[in-house]
Length: 175
Image (tube, rainbow, N blue to C red):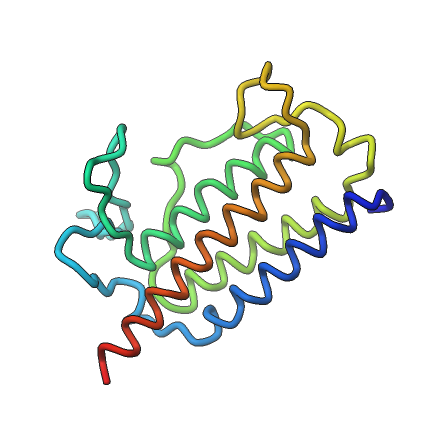
């Protein structure tokens, strides 16, 4: 990364990740499946033991409160598909993204995505940032790879804040 935009995107990502890491280090396996209200989206084990996320093709009204498990699956989905696009791999459907399970497996999965994304950020040049974004917009949107990297930072910040808030609520409510 040599372009000042690359430096800014990397700084923003590193700052967001450091705030997320504060919560990741403190999560317990029980935090992941805690349901703070009755209307929740979570992940559930199917008959074969695979973790399957709650899902609707159109957003329900009211929107269910996601659990930390669902949010960590969701990060794996959108970030994994973004990496698929950037790396020229066939983008996976949400049904192909599996959640590794509560506790350390989920945390390590997120940290693995971070490592892969850092490699991508380190490879970006100013020219790369000006290319058309492969995701999450349609090809004719006019959005660039810089927009996509900024979106990853924003989406991660939002999901990290949601996970942090749920962790704090669970900790406060358990005495």
